[in-house]
Image (cartoon, rainbow, N blue to C red; front, side):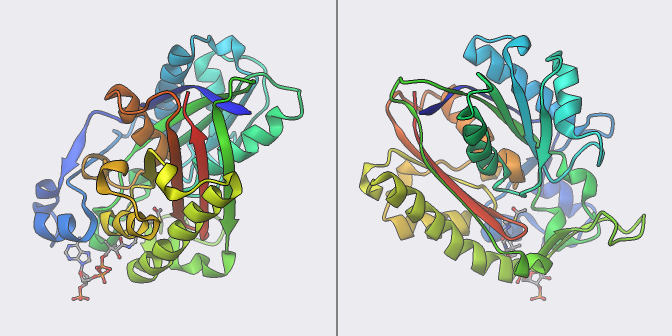
Length: 317
Ligand code: ACO
């Protein structure tokens, strides 16, 4: 089975509170908290790039795994906010870590990108060509925010999370994964940077209500599919680690699975929506707090632009 042998995360120290937004935008703490659950979001300064956040998270994952950068055989970065279109943020991060010559590539799968990375990394490990694969979910998405759009500016934050995968017979690891997408709904949530947009018109555009409605359905479906693929019932779960985009979406997913609130990890209040970083950022906090224990069944589930959605069921250890 493919196992996570080290996991780490990083968020830049500077953060913006809801009250900070009140000073330059027609919004308020009560609206943001009641609609989304967000209180703070961490923001990277202009000189700190996506690859810098990724490097910090990966260094911590390597340290937890007891490995050195030279042990890594492949780097996969899931991000919607790369340093540059090319080279990939994976190549830049590998160089910053001092990894040397290894295959590196980015995947663009929005918020579920880290979970896409787990399945892709697992599949590539099974070729037998690699021993350790580094999968990173990272965003410096606040650099693309349209600070005049109150419907999106308050929602997003920056961060990174990284996992080292290997295949072994420990009995711990990734029990099942599920990836899905539907490009026909892509117009509802976009980062408008690319050949379709003239320079200078950057911004995140979202039709919040439609995204919300789809997210509620697909997060629940994804959760149930990963459980079914592993032959597991929701009651056997120790943790649900949902993508941290909106507290009400998290609540709906919890209810769909019939789980008690104490089995759902929530840190949206501190980080906002960190897209591809959100799940490993949550898992890192759970490790720090001693909440993730050997043998725990952990279900991670996510939904995002594309639309894309995904889940992974992990027996932790
Ligand atoms: N402060 C105050 N008022 C606001 C703000 C704000 N920051 N933003 C919007 N409003 C206003 C709107 O203008 C609107 O006013 P109107 O009724 O006068 O037109 C009113 O609040 C309601 O706006 P809605 O967008 O309908 O509010 P809603 O209850 O849907 O909440 C939210 C908005 C939080 C964005 C919600 O729709 C949501 O979370 N959607 C899903 C987002 C998501 O899950 N993304 C995750 C997947 S994608 C990804 O993670 C990259």
